[in-house]
Image 1 (tube, helix red, strand yellow):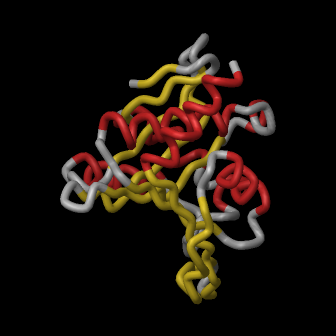
Image 2 (spheres, helix red, strand yellow):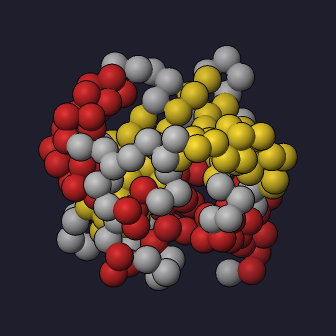
Length: 184
């Protein structure tokens, strides 16, 4: 568990599946997912059971630190201890009242601490639809570099789309944190 000023990032529990199913049935939450449609409780719980037994994946719940109220979810995939890398497959804030207030940035900063310090990753990747300006802004602000376009690599509503691939290395992240500390 990692706690910042406004959020807690913790391992997802089975009890979170009801919320994930509720959230992932909303178009405003899944509009930038690679998915064939809304995800129901059976799909979510089946995937939860798969994830908890898969050492290459983690689901994390983003919760408000003061109330412990769940706000969103992060799905980490491709945790590779040989190459010290992982991929952020999904991140969302389902609670609309906290969007645009820095909670997503805090969640990603906490995730990078988890990735680089706890999972000892050397490289973290994320891909997003090129037209997702919110994701693009967030990843740029956090220091992710664009590595290229994955041609027709994402599928949404039975149609294929390009995905923008970004990455940040541990040393880049450490350098950014040193710069932030100097400015403080």
